[in-house]
Length: 450
Image (cartoon, rainbow, N blue to C red):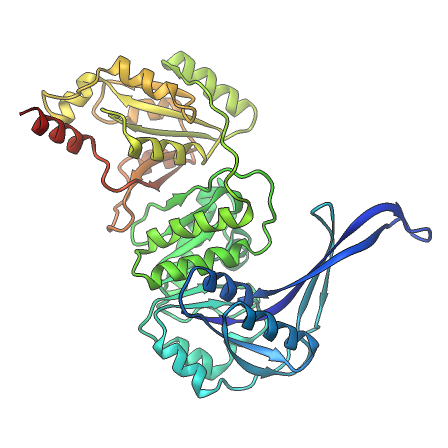
């Protein structure tokens, strides 16, 4: 794997604060420790090396103490560095921290300096790579003409982590990974719900950049992937308690690139990247509080009205949920993370028979509703008799309508997407667990009974 981009020296100065400066209303930090690490593309390369395999970093380094320190840190992490000479000083980001909280950030290095041409060895590494990550921090490296021309003529998958001050990705990248703020600045995506704005921005950038896919990173809420279909795939992040988000975006991009290098689909790579970035911010040590959902329209109405009165987001999903299995639970848990309550629209027994045949459902609607309501991620269950949930959706008017799906296939727009858009809602897909199927479970059970 090859990482291309601007490398910074990140320095954390930790200490204690117990008084104010006598000549100004400012806290005094008593320094206790200092730690250095590569930042920017350097951090992405270090993280990729931790995932295994050979990692090459093509970057620009100044001939100063900061550049020397970066070379030392990168070498110790097992990263092979092809350094283009750079005029000026090594950029540094210094964070002054007390009690694990950042008090002030000091940026050093000034304006970016001119970058020399890449050596032939660096260009050869690009041609031989199994995957390439461009980690642009807006300091000019990826504008270098020879390097940019080489990036535009590669057969290996390219992941491009853009910067508003940097150039557009070269046409044909497999995946671009802007964050929400970058999408707003680059595409002017504002207005409407958060998911709708991110979707519009990602679709615009995908068209403009001629990219295979655009994944918008959304902090603690995971990522939104716009791919071949018109319905986005939302991958929620697991809940974490605290943690330092600095570098999470680099972790996301590096993990996605490593997954693509191993042959993963883009959707699989983004799922892996969300998991790795979540673990990077804080180890998964906390669980979401359990809750007990309620069944019926009255109960669902109370839940929805309470959430709306508090300014929250209503999420809904639907299905038969016959023989509840791990795949169902994964979809429901992912859906619940997209808002402040989850209402499940459940097909009645008559509705299931019309869709699946006279032998279904195996479990009656009363028991199916009780099982769903017992899950901590479900706030309410509504049973409907029609073949589609359009009537109950028109009543609930959820902000987000969720279905489990495989984004590796060319997904057309969800049938309910146009309906949900009428009140400003958004239809999305979430990943499902492979190999889990009610139909397969029933067939296996019947085969075993013979």
